[in-house]
Image 1 (cartoon, rainbow, N blue to C red):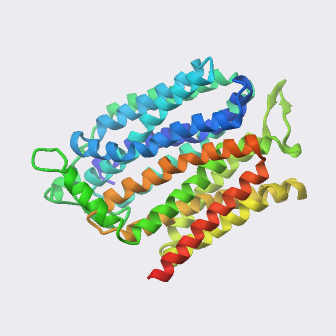
Image 2 (image 1 turned 120 degrees about the vertical axis):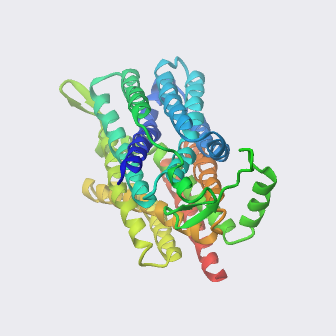
Image 3 (image 1 turned 45 degrees about the vertical axis):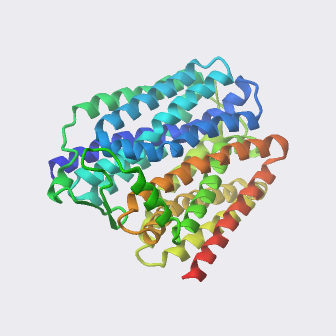
Length: 418
């Protein structure tokens, strides 16, 4: 990569890694918060789902802000807000303050993806390569952020661990502020008329008006056109997948910790939770799933690939707990396959979205996709907490399996409508 592309890649990789470090470390602390704050899984699920939901709710306005004010300042603000919100968690004396801290984190986190993807789209000449490195940065945060948290929890109180995890945000802001790049290098090359996005294979037309504002009427018109196509069904599929994703991961460490095979043990005089390492291992396998999911779309019809992963997720949800009764190794094998399929689904649905949206509204389509995946899908955390509180883990997993089957059924509808 040339200098500007390399700088943008480094800047966005750092911020993307921070985002996923915080997003996927939160479930590790839920196990602790249930005891510390003496609340039910239902209450904590609702609190967490609000924060997660803001990531999706803020996606559309964040994209509009990036169009009007540029991405760099927004990304720096997002990292500062995420780190600050996470730090506030360490100070929470009760579940109400905890909720406020999670809301601060979620609001800040909502800024990152639209601003980061917009920066790459407008500033990078080799956009495909920069998007690839951007994904790598996110994967590092996904895998090693929760692992670091799990290791630190062996030796430190959870509040100190949260403070330790907030420190990298300060480092990212300092490093990011020292990186120089041109935010609009690719746009200038294209004459400022169209911005092609190699991450989704299409182009989007700049929706700004001549004085840098945005045309609300145009956005409404484009939205109506977008939802009259096959995109509408695909959007519902993404929402269902998002509900499954959030409902499964939010309380997964807690569900595993309740299995007799994964009780607490002692390391160097400190208690350790094996459930945390199973969870982080599942996330690490997800890196392979993301790569495989992206590659398979080059060789297999995307609807069939999406159908396969959704059916697999339905089956895996049902056999998740029964596998533990068979033995530790079969259970770990199911966890590995689950992590692989869970993350393989993401790049597949992203390609499907691109195929069912007109090229000049790809940006808008992904804004709605984030709203469905992270916004509506955040309800999965509240659903999981409620079912665990008033029913049981098998009921939760059966419900999630049914949700995945409904999503798979909608894929079949899409295929028949072709």
